[in-house]
Image (cartoon, rainbow, N blue to C red; front, side, top):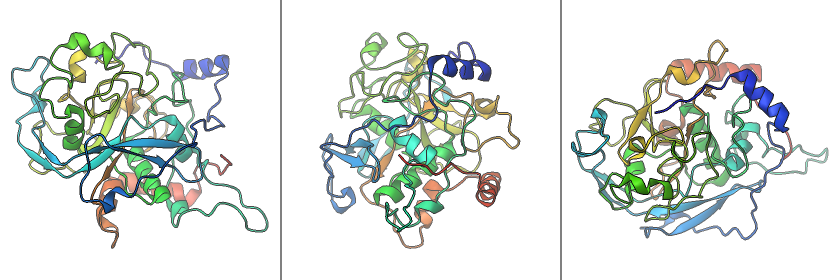
Length: 369
């Protein structure tokens, strides 16, 4: 991965002032006109590859599209003779997957900043009228205010959200589930690779020739200075955009040197390392392959001056975002333990910081959308 010149906090702030960037942005530009709600996917028995539904985030103008992925088997990882292969891409073994839906593109700032700045919470009038929030939504923790623009000057409307920790991405899926009434989570590594390959067995979903990558991906050769608006390169055979490049994407799994793990999901037990997939605008072609993996580390927060460091933001990972999954079979709502495994903090340190944040009221300001 090519890191390029580092961005100092002072330069980011200066650039924001010069360009007139407002952070947070005060208007949500995604239009909800014509949004149709698909029947609940979990009420169906199967999905057809490439079918879609559009989810509108209640109380906002934001929406996003989900693409159906049929159940099947995948052999995650790469063959030993694949160009650019790393040692952590094997050994390969078959993984059986149930049907699921996955975001057509990465979560954008149009969606994420609602969660980040609590812009879905409407001040109530003295007579009590106002938006009725879903039960428990106020109890969901949200990010503290960042001290620098988290788009790092690369753009907001229509661009992928970046710079969130693995924990923050999981909390977003908890919030999104509460807002919509539909269970959302991060994909597993196996699900991500299965969706990326779309039935192919080559290094990239379009074949083995990296010379074609520019038609399908934003990467170091064509976008070294920053990410690009989502969905502006050709999709894979199942209609999903930006699986190669633009920004790398969190999956739920802990990173291991031997992949895949014995279990279908390698559940996180520590703050580091987690896995990101797909490569980014800072990466060369081999790092964008379907099987390519990257492990997170403490260096992704190197310039965070807080003690303890933020559980929400990555000051040195402007290349990391995520997309969401909705499984066809939702976890049981009884007790909530299965859902919590997908959403909750990984470590005791994260739990303590979260509890302190709740006690001190260190949370986003309540404001109108």
